[in-house]
Image (cartoon, rainbow, N blue to C red):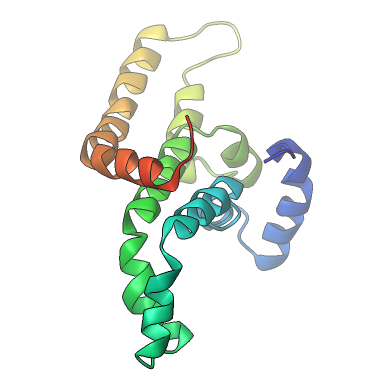
Length: 162
């Protein structure tokens, strides 16, 4: 979290080029979902809030590590995973920088990049840009309204202060 994304973009670009993910949506989705330092801290705090006795009781009952994770821990961390998914979606929905670097064909542009097309060299069509921005806000509002309960529960139980 201390290293800005602009510093890691060149190595990430080289990795995406070697994998063959340039000009695909995978180059935007996978790094933001898997290389998220906020997610590590959120889930760590959530796991630390789960009593150790639950894991010890499962071991006494004969459960192995995978069973403990799949049947005990995973259902308990659903609020934190939901909150992390919503935060990641909301953060990446408006991201302009990564799609600018990784996408080159206009049929794969994200919403902010398509809105940027309304900005010309000498003039800007503000009415179309505002209409597009208003329409682009609708999915974000829907995700937030549906996931508001999970955001509050996940952040409250993990102990992260806002």
